[in-house]
Every structure is written in C-alpha cells, then in structure tokens.
Image (tube, rainbow, N blue to C red; front, side):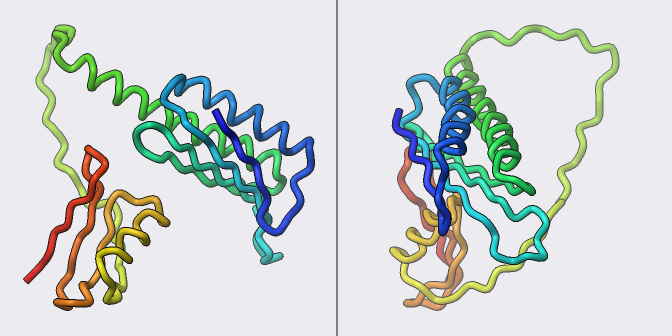
Amino acid sequence: MEMIVKGRRMEVTPAIRDYAEEKIGRVAKILDSWLMSAEVELYTERNRSIEKGQVAEVTVYTKGPVIRAKEAASDMYAAIDLVSEKLERQVRKYKTKIVDRHTKGAPAPVAVETEPEEPEAPAIVKTKTVSAKPMSTEEAVLQMELLGHDFFVYRSEDTEGMNVLYRRHDGDYGLITSV
C-alpha cells in the first residue's frame, strides 16, 4: 500500500509524518487487500480567529469507492487522531456493507418479537440550497470528482435545464435531465 503524507503550505516534520503513517496504517489493516493507496494532507488554517486551525485530511483509494475524511483540532497530532477515528468508522461501515452484500443469500437469524413496532416515517433533516451555474457534462463530472460526492446538480449549458449527474454502483455515471 502506498501512503503519501504531505503538507499544504507547511513543512511536514518526520515525527508528524511517522505519527500520521502509524495512525492511518491502522485503518489500512482493516481494508486488507481492498486498499490501493492513501493520501494524507496536513495544513494550518490561516485565519487566526479559528481556534481549531490544524487540519488533517485523508483520502483513501480502494478498489471500490474513494473514502475521504477531514478533521480539525488545536494541534496537528489531535487532528490526526480525530481524522483516523472518523476514517476508521467509515472504513468499518464500508467493509460491513461489502460483507453483507456477499452474505445476502444466507438465511437471516430469526428474531422473536413480542410486540410489533411502528416504523418511523423518514424526515427531512437537512436542506441545502445550491446555485447551479451553466456547465457542460464533462465539467460537472470533474466538479463531482473534486468534491468527492456521489451526485452533482447543475444547469446544462446547452438546454439551460437542471441536470443531476450521479455515480452508479458499477463505477459509471448516470445523468438525469429536465425538459
């Protein structure tokens, strides 16, 4: 597994590099053979009013999706600790989904319920407003990849209609257009 530890507008000391490699290396052991490479980017926010200005950002490239985590703290070691914990949760969730997908055909354990529970209706817990500027589909793909999202909403420069670009499970892209 290849791991790159770099600093953005800062020099990464050997002690911090070793610490980051050790912490992120633990996460790498969870992924086993699925892990291809990891990139750790460390930087300091330039705004002095930000209390937690030391930022650690990790991008893990697997044979499946790209897993990304970012955390900030008052010192770099704490930021690395926080980001490794967050990344470990994400990796365990991903690995559980993979294992569940492979054991889907297996019979589920039978649970005895004494009282049926009412399923809770889903609720909208977050609303986000976007300003969709006109762009080409190729530019939208690039923007989606740079953001690390699974979908991207944009306005088509050809038709001026709203489009939704999304990543399919097979790794290709899908496009929903409006008329």
